[in-house]
Length: 129
Image (cartoon, rainbow, N blue to C red; front, side):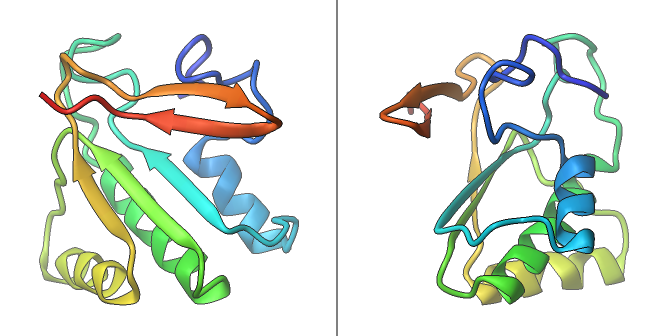
């Protein structure tokens, strides 16, 4: 899914889809990073559709592992409505991501993250209820 109009995609630099991030990692085109925030559940749970597509979580977890392995000192956060992993192997990937230091933060569909550019950097904010 191309999240046009959501979270600055297509308007703000460095806002990419999980698929684009995956290719950047694979091709070695990702510059060194200090911070990465991945927003899962984009467009789902009432934002554009009412359902969970069941693959975003695993792709986000896999990319979080890849980022932490390539940039161990980077702060990697995954924001989500719920983590849905289906199977023992997927659960092991989730545990590995957490063991490497990736942080997982749940947000409510009623209080979604906000993304803005500030001083040439992206700023992702999340209001807790």
